[in-house]
Length: 323
Image 1 (tube, rainbow, N blue to C red):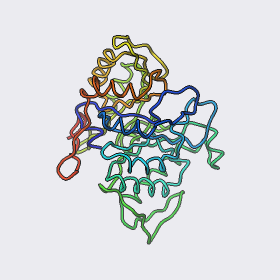
Image 2: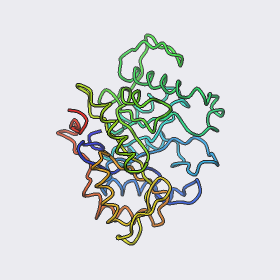
Image 3: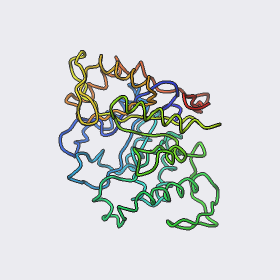
Image 4: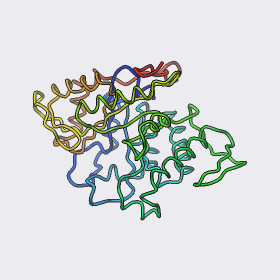
């Protein structure tokens, strides 16, 4: 959390797969090398996606691999970059499975996991898993509550519509006693509920004034007495042009732009309160290895990751919204 969201300034994350591709399925050529390159370049985090089935009406299957299996490899092939999910579809998984997998990755990575969560937006997935699409909002809340209690308590008593526990415990527990949970979008929940029950908000790329209003509302709702800093992140598709002076041109949920204008846009996003820019490279027309090198030289030094304290212990973030 401290590396991804140091508070008071913006960092940069990368959404897998780190490649530009047409159609829904990436090649995944050199995917692990790109993630290691991103870590060396100064990206604060890398985010994996939970897309169990190919839905032809959606244009992206994420990194294709199961997110927990993929994160297992990332724990062994990276050393410091924050590992995040963007996002685990909670209603499609039993919360005990999610908790067991999340705590395992957290332990194996030395406490580097952030859990982005979602209700799911691909209707074909729900009947395949025997789940009710219309009931996903309530199941999401039930799943998150179950997830929290089994990870944050020893031998918890659980009496949930999703299961009952007594006299037993879930192992392992997270490295730092809890795993930060960040909501993706609204998830069919009220924003007050999101502010009260999650540790941060992952959002999309609406117009600047709308995003500024979203952030102002988020700060208002998360600035309670004694409340911890809760970050706000923005996911943006990026096509970095070869011409560094190219002006921004809108693309789906993002921009085709040269690095000079990109740097200006990022400073503006930082000014309105975005804590991390999460870059999706799907629409990149250039090799992403080249794009990462250019970002590493000209952009990322302005938005470095947060630091850790002595003996690898993360500093407590100090941000705009809390002490």
